[in-house]
Image (cartoon, rainbow, N blue to C red; front, side, top):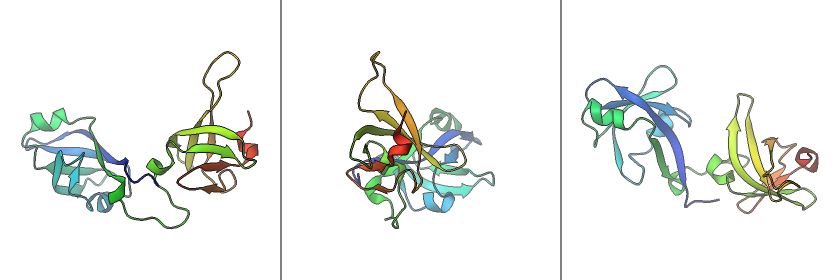
Length: 169
């Protein structure tokens, strides 16, 4: 897969207290998964302390952030690590970063477009695919496909296969 990309693990939602701690929204498997890493954003932020906030997020302190003003400036900052540093996955598992950008083809070999986003609205991941061709009015067309075995029977580092029934307009 694309091991030279960055993977977003969390985002700073605001300051916490007056000593430079920040609140984090987590995108991974919780605080334990985030604790695997010490440096984020190409080593611009070095994790000093991390704890669960009891609400599904976390409270973090970075060595480079020493007061509330500096913590407030981080609001909206995403915390990334290189994809190559992420743990290997079992068969059938994937990181969103590995899917985004993949060419999508139908199970009959027709080029469909490219994966531009992976969303989750509560019932599982959904892929947003931008069609390779524009419509007759020149507009970009997109469609969504559930990331299920019925809709996406196969994917690898080169392409994602979509069952033709899920790729119809």
